[in-house]
Amino acid sequence: MLQPVVWCLCVIVAAMAWASPAWGAPPDGYAMADSTGGPAAASSATSRHVQSRAGPRAGPRLLASQSPFARGWNRQFFIGPSVLAGERSALAGEQRFRLPGDFESHEAIVVVADGLARDFPEILTAIVAGSKGSQSVIALVSSPLHRAYVARVLAKGRLSPDSVRFVLAPTNTIWMRDFGPLFVCRSDGARCAVDPGYGKPSRAADDAVPAAVARQFHASLSTTVLTWHGGNLLSNGRGLLLTTIQAVNANIEAGHDTRTIKRFLGGQLGAAQIVALEPLRGERTAHVDMFACFTSADTVVVGDYSRSVDRVNAAVLDRNAARLAEIRVEGKKLNVIRVPMPSNRDGVWRTYTNVIFAGGTLLVPGYPRVSMASQRRAMAVYERCLPGWQVVSVDLRALIRHEGGLRCISTYVPLRRKGPGPES
Image 1 (cartoon, rainbow, N blue to C red):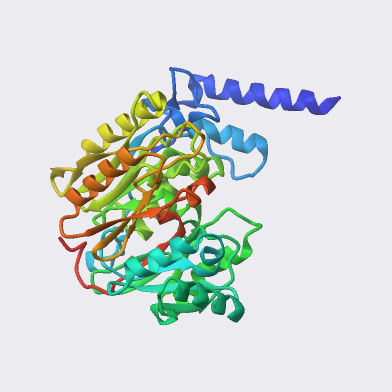
Image 2: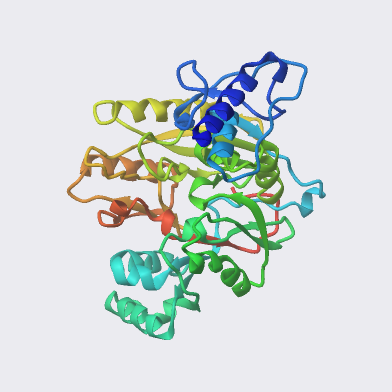
């Protein structure tokens, strides 16, 4: 009988504490969020940014606990769409690391070759063929037997097994972007692999991949207490990072304050500006790469839904595009280019922004017989953004039903190139 009473008292005390002026404003760096003027709640991934309260006293503190009460309490600190300043390393500029842009030249692209060969062989061969002559392909396999199978699949696609570099590394899934390492680099050419928390305890093999890949490239490996999937990070290579409020708020809910978040994104990934955007409403990953991508340091492509297809997410993406259009990169406003978003009326979240850059070849998701008109418009957008590049469509009808695109199944290893940022 006492347990329900205790829970009710806890809820009442928490509500009174937050409502009381004695608590004052939240700690520096927090922003309150609401969707229609009310307090933030579990669904605040769709909320808008409002000003925090004023007050001279310190606000209520995050609870470092995984209990339902602690996680519920921490939700009051959720942020809305906003721009955060990354807390960059105190090291000298030439010693700071940066997260390269996807559009830059890479030494290698890493994929789970055995999983792709088994379930999506045409996609594997398209990646290997598209990368030929521009970057090596690191093909992860779970065993010598799997290696032989992948070699047969490549041969069937008229590709030599020598087209890839096999690495023995067992995996649980094919979603390399989310569990793979984030490679950062310094202006002197040094590289380091960063391994954020994966948040999938049942996928121990996936979680061991960052260390295995880092060893292949003789790179040191750093970690963080935060959970962050690579699909929720886009970099322009010059200190601008895009993510969604879902990624930020998930870490706040787990008890990490915004300063910890800004230290990770600024110190380990080199972010000076962090733009937290609204995720697509109803799309389960809530990842930024499902609706945006950089094609250069000063140009970002953002999805564009027809209001007749998805009125709610048309407005979400319009707001995201407007927010990005106000961002400045080296003194100039960011160029925002819109690209069509295919229909999601059947519950499948198709996208044209989840692409692979392969050093002169851009692999773009395609959906034959689903949305050919939007496909042609999307290809034309990339041809304008990337003059001189070959833009190739890859049939993604099967893969996209598993809630991921081309970028989701790959990660890059940057070249050891000296300099402060991406090549022009």
